[in-house]
Image (cartoon, rainbow, N blue to C red; front, side, top):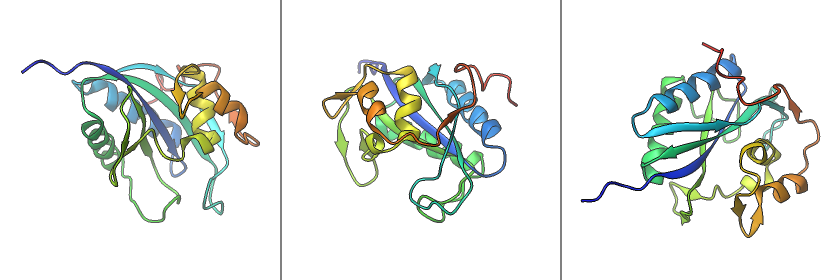
Length: 173
């Protein structure tokens, strides 16, 4: 059987409980340590207002591009396992969380299944996804439009960059 072809996937990261910067850095290191995942680039770190349930602390958000041979469902499973390792508890939809890892894009893969929709179904509406993703994949296309164009169209009021580049996570525990 031939070896699976590598693809570039985009992962969204976020959190607002505990020390989200440190937790997100740990998540990136765990992703990169996986034998079938290679971290390629990370966006700047952003402070963002909550979305959906707005009665909670602000979030930290970033995006990463990874190279992987895992299929989208396998990559999602790795992300969910990392969330569990980092004490993610799923309670309220759009509620507070220690860490959230979302598979946003997976090469040219398109899926609309109950357990995984790729591209992520609401990513183009969310500045906390589009702004960091535009840092690292501005020419990627979702729904016939570039990430850079989507990023310029979303309401980015209140979003603040907390780092000069994508190296913010490397010095964290």
